[in-house]
Length: 243
Image (cartoon, rainbow, N blue to C red; front, side, top):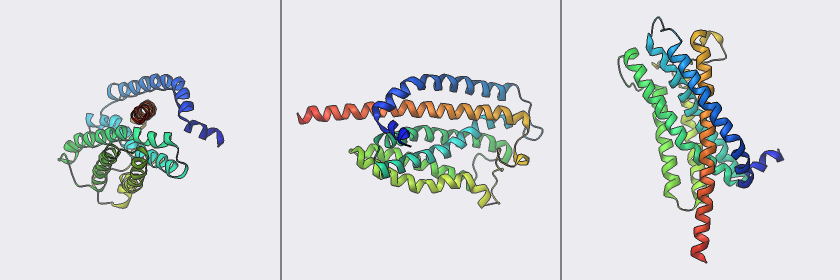
């Protein structure tokens, strides 16, 4: 465990990510492009949903990351509260815009899929509603970081907000199980093989999900590095003013 906490040191984090980030970025690009091309151009139309089924290669990975990005922010926020490691707080801040974009992609692609399938762009379905609330929490989280000048105070307040928002992140994941009357279909991926999509869609979907995950990791690492540099710049400017 001691070796893990070494990366809470900004210098150690910057040195390590300087090496691994390019590899992660290249792998993410290749995996994501490969998965999307495979899914959109080399899979058949579904016998019920037609070509609209192919939106799962964007919708499902984005929805998974929308939820898990918030849970990653929660873990980083808890580390900040308990151990006061600045890198973890900055990583949570860095992940928020990425998670917000993923949530927005999930909402938009869900609406595009829902219009031909449900006959409406939007329905106050439990999962859709909880996703919308989660998106608003992302916006509130980012606004709170920007509104508070002191970084440590902002990290404390946003960590509390992250705890509250985690309720809606979990609801977004399990709403279908809680409310059976919702329009939203069941999970496309499950430990129960009978609930998975057909193999012809399943395998390219896994590649797309891997690409989205790697893209998320690359963007969070990149943004965390930017946050560390910005924090250093603010500290230097403050010293100049005081000196």
